[in-house]
Length: 141
Image 1 (cartoon, rainbow, N blue to C red):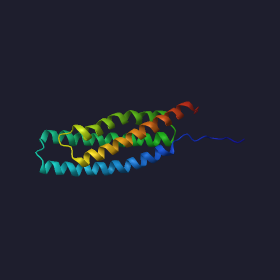
Image 2 (cartoon, rainbow, N blue to C red):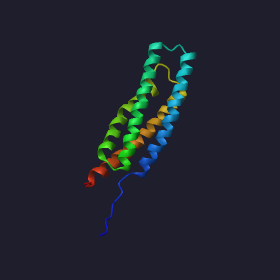
Image 3 (spheres, helix red, strand yellow):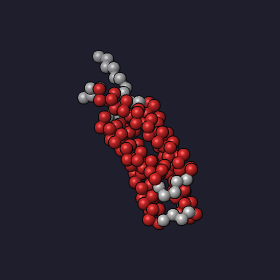
Image 4 (spheres, one colour):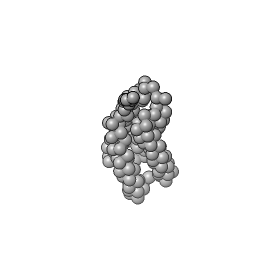
C-alpha cells in the first residue's frame, strides 16, 4: 500500500521566518545602542526612556513567541500555532509602528529599520494567511 502525503508547509514563509529572526536580532541590538546614544546625548525624559525600554523588552518577548509559533506551525502544518503567530503579529506590528513614528525621539536609522521590519511583517502576514488556509482545508487526523 502506497500512501502519498502532500506537504502543505510554505518554504517562502519558512525562509522569511529565518531571515526575520536574524533581522530582528540586529534590529534589537541597534535599538539598544540607539537608546544608549539617545539617553546620553539627547534630552530624553527619564520616564519616556523607561517606557521605551520596557516596550522594547515586551517587543522581544512577543517576537520570540511569534517566530516560535510561526516556525513550528508552518513546519508541523498546524493551524492553531499558525493562527497564534498571526495574532501575535498584530501587537508586534503596533510596536514596530511605535518605534517608527511615536517614540520621543526617532532617529533616521530607527525609521529605516522599523520600516524594513514592517515589510517583513506584511510579507509574513500574507504568506501566513495562505499557509493557514492550506492547513485548514486539509484533512489531518
